[in-house]
Every structure is written in C-alpha cells, then in structure tokens.
Amino acid sequence: MPPAGPFVGRPEALARWPWLEQVDWEGLDAAFPVRIPRDYVEGATDPDDPRLLTVLPDAREALAAPDDREDPVGDALMSPVPWGVQKHADRVLLLLTKRCHLYCRYCFRRNHEPGDAQDPSSEEWARLLAWAASSGAREAILSGGDPLAISDDRLYEVIDALRPSIPVIRIHTRAPITYARRITPELVAGLAARGPIWVLVHANHPGELTPAVEDALRRMVDAGLPVLNQAVLLAGVNDDVDVLAQLSERLVSLRVFPYYLHHPDHAAGNAHFRVDPARGLALHRALRSRTSGIGLPAYVVDPPDGSGKIPVEEWMARGAGGTRG
Image 1 (cartoon, rainbow, N blue to C red):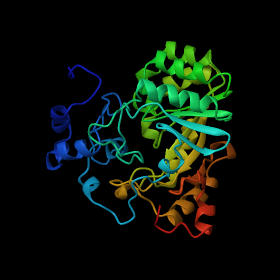
Image 2: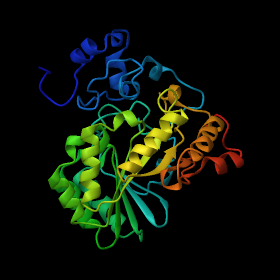
Image 3: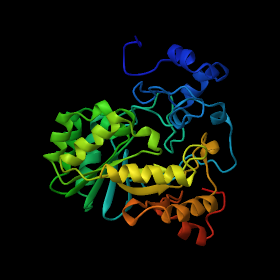
C-alpha cells in the first residue's frame, strides 16, 4: 500500500529513487520548493524518465550560469500593480497565486523567497481585480503559480469580477497534466457555464499523457472548453524530433491544439535544461515536415525586456539569440 496522501514526501522519494541520497534535498527545496504529485510519477523508476528529470531536485540547480536572469521574461518591468502584468494593450495577466501542485525544476518563476506571501492579500486581490477590469483589455490570462491551485469558489469569484469588462478569459494551468484529479466534473461545469474560457495546458512529453490526463483533457473539450497546449523545449527531455512529433500527434488526437513550443527561459538554476536556439530552430524545421499545420506549434521566446513572445527566428534575426536568453 502506498503512503496516504497525494504527494511524495522525502523519505518515500529516497526509497523510490535512491540516487537522490547524493542530492541536497533540503537546500534545493529551500531555494525552490520540491513538490511531487504521486499520480504524476506513477511507475517512474528510471533516472532518465522525462517526468523525473523535470520534477526531482538536481544538484545542477545550485550552479550559477553567467546568463542567468532574476526576471527572465521581464514580468517585473510590466507590472503596474502587485500580482498583475500587462505587456500588450489588449491583454492582462493575473498571477492568482505562487502555489503549484508540482514545481517544475525548469520554472521561469523560481523566485520564491522564504517567507514570501504565496497568495495576494485581501487588499491586493481587490486592487488587482479593479485594475484588470478597468484596463481596457479584451483578454485576461489567469496564471501563477497555477490558477487551479486555488479553490473553485475563488476562481469563479475572479472570473465573475472580470466580466463583462473582459469578454475572454484564459486559464494557463499545468494541473490537468500534473494533478489530473483537480479537473473534476464540478470544476469543468463551472468553467463551461462562464464561457468563453480558453484553457491552456502544459505538456512537454507524450509520456505525461496518461489515461487519467487524457480523461481530464477530454472532459474539458467535451464540455466545450477550447484546450491548447504550451510545451517548453528542454534539453534531455524533449529536444528530439520524434518525441515532439509524438507529442503533437497525441495532442491532436485528443482535440488539443499544440499552440506553442517555448524556448527555455534563463532562470537561475535551470541552465542544464537550456537548448541553443539554432538547435531549436533545426528541430522545429524537422517537426514541420513531420506534422500537419494543426499539429505544428509556434516556436517562440519570451524575451527578458518584457516585450512579450516573438518567434525565435525573428528574435535571432534581431541579434538577440545565440546562447543568451
């Protein structure tokens, strides 16, 4: 019998993955939380399993790289209110929490300081929602952390407060992939009743698309919620055209559109996941020959100047590419 509870604790992790004995779990967890849903790593025993590579603490996270950035996508430069970001006139980004069901070790928002508030205060909530509703934006992106790490009622409160000022709501969440049990019939019904709501999920590898994950994705699509996928190109995980093609094929079969393939952002601690953009472009060109238009994600980068996502090819043409992020 597995231990009770949905998350793998340190003692169980050391028993299941003995190579972690050599890793400074406590130190790495203090720098960026280690949280591993048991469902997500079911059956994962190989050190090279792509799921384990992205969730288990790794000694390389403690190594500084010369091109590390504290704010790799320029969020702070475009944050007029706490927990709010606006990079485009027609869109606002609301960071509803810093909490996630699973903390991806390549995360670009790794700046979790000990003692930091994990959720907005009551005053910050009120200010954030008032700012968004009066921004003139036509789309609101609910992000975090993971917006599905908050309760259904809190989530509905946000959506209802933004309507009718903002007609389109996007929920950017990894929960359907990492914590599929969160996608309950009640949640899906509540979101469908508040449409138009678009759900953007985050799967990087076909191995993440377990039967439980597929059921969660189908549940949303069947309810009329458009679902798109954003993947991150990660060295040693999915920087292989066969893997990327399989991911796209599986997503399309589930009626999930492979929307973006993100060039990895240069957050401190994730240098071992980074892929040279020239190699990324070569992989994307190879993928183009392997999949139809509905299966081809756009290969994009979110530059550190806060200007927002652009195609990697354009970014390199500007002279901003190379190995810098």
